[in-house]
Structure formats: C-alpha cells, structure tokens
Image (cartoon, rainbow, N blue to C red):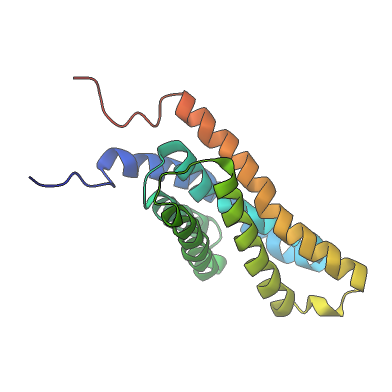
Length: 184
C-alpha cells in the first residue's frame, strides 16, 4: 500500500499562502536593514527576528514535518522578488531558520507542539544570528551598553516574533485551515 505523502497539494498550498504573507513582511524587513544598521544597529534583531514567522506559523497551523522549511523557502522567494539585492540572504536565512525549526520539531518526533518547543528554536536562532551579525557588522565598536542591548534584542526579537507567529498559527487552526481532509 503506497504511503500518503506528508506534503500534499493542500499542505503545500497552505505553506504557499503563509509564505506569500510572511514573504511580504520579510521583503519589507530587507529594505529596512541598511537604514536600521546605519541609524540604530542595536535594534536590528527586531527586524531580523521577523524571519522566524513562516516556519512558526506553518508548524503551529499544520503540525506536520517539513512545513517550516517549505514555508520558509516560499517566503524567501517572495521576499527576493520584493528586494532582489537580498535574495541570497533570504534563501540562506530560510534554510537556516527553517532547518533549526525542523530539527527542534524532529527532536521531539513531531509529537509535541507546546509553545516551549517553538521558543527553544527562537532562542537558538536568536543566539546564532546575534553572534553572526555582531561580528559581520563590527558591532564590537559600539559602547559596551549598546553591545549588551544588541545581544539581548537579537535573542528576544525572534522570541517576540515567535509569540506573534504562534498567535497567527492558532488563529488559522481555529479557522479550520489545518483541517487537511474533506468530509466524505
């Protein structure tokens, strides 16, 4: 007996809708990057944290394997259309963030969908990105208080956006988006 694929057409369409909506937000965040890094680099974690949304919303809504990665890649394609200069960064972020979200879900065998699990992936993403941007943007040149503030915001940004994503995903579940089978 053939197995039913996890990523059915319906699941992929839901991931695509999530990807388009969050990709638009990601494209706007892309255009805010340079001005924000020039004006207030300590706040960059709030903007970068928005990129956790596709996977969080997809996993909270559908609660299936691979939906975080699928939604992230689709969101990256939409963001790339809005801000083509950042296409490679969007795709890299999609693979990194979606991959981390899938690894955390796989670690609990895609059986635990409690909020704590989503927040673990948010903290991991925040810590990795905080350190990478800290060195890439030479934020070590800032005063110590600004460095500490940057690191805190960079970790808390993805955590805050995860809370938003969980709320959106739960709203989509309540609206019936997660109902994957039609009544016979």
